[in-house]
Image (cartoon, rainbow, N blue to C red):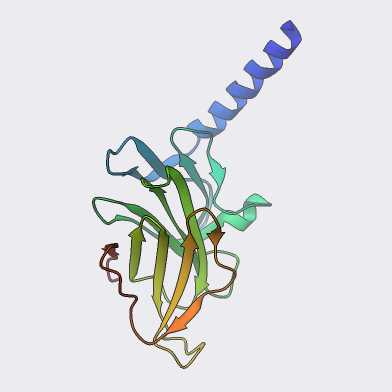
Length: 185
């Protein structure tokens, strides 16, 4: 029993040291009641890149992408808390991919669950739709991946991210959605 307690304490201290070495890039209050939060953190700077982490509700930070920490090493990162009253954290930049890679994460008040969409396209997202049934990330198709104007990534509550994005010519319409317009860079 004592040995287990010592191991647990050492693990907690090691984790907190790692968290102390991280710098907060952006912290967003989530949910209509703002009880939940998500943080974008960075560490291990090399030249103009860092390893990026996500922390939800004061939990231990996790690398932004699963696997080796180098999968979460990125540069030219842009991040934004957008929307209201539902909010979303959107992060994008140059990660180990040939495209702009990123993610959108939010706490869905209706389902009381976290939702996340990962994306990789030539352009950064311009809009995120948030509603009780999930969220959609809209990216202009300026890279000519299809003959359509927009590429839409979708997360369906209770099911997760859809297998592949949808190409459309018209922005999604839904009167029940909160629309988060993202800054133009």
